[in-house]
Length: 108
Image (cartoon, one colour):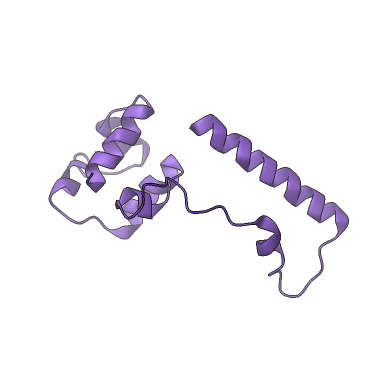
């Protein structure tokens, strides 16, 4: 499946046309259709990926997984410039993780 086909399929799942997607992303008319024959800029591909909450690799057909493997927030939190997390901050991270999970389920 090509980049354009993946974008079109995502748009269809979200009940929108390519033209509507271009307007929402403030892209010029037929920008996405040009992706059938021209390589897009990475910033535009990233913009579409962010809009649909998928990875750039998914759009490019490098993986069939819509998302990159979920990173463990605790692992990310460990890289906080050597600072220790308070108990309240760790609880907030846990609430955020649950929020992200619920948001993802709603979009699927």
